[in-house]
Length: 126
Figure 1 (cartoon, rainbow, N blue to C red):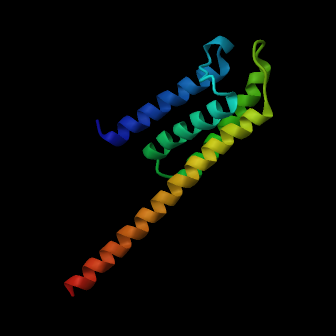
Figure 2 (cartoon, one colour):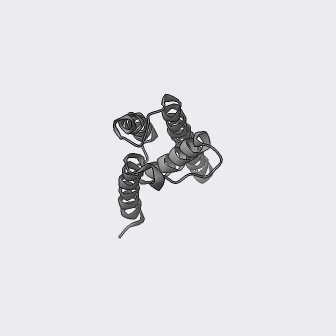
């Protein structure tokens, strides 16, 4: 198996786990003890980084995961032992968008560096 395939399978498995934890019983939801704000932001930030490694299209990944974060938070209002909290959805979306923007910035910087490096090599060889 290639690294890319392993990343894709792992990110889909993490997605299934995320949906299960978000919509499962409240006592199964992991908490850091720092606060739900940090839990949502960091969790979705790391999740988005993992997805962007598997699929290097940060704006597409970011958009899809932002929608997923809001939908999962809203679905929690349908469960008897859970409640939906709009601010939690905002923290989740902020984590997704921050990670997606950082990955996009990194990809663009790497492309620019590689193109300047390639231009420098061709100028030296001429």
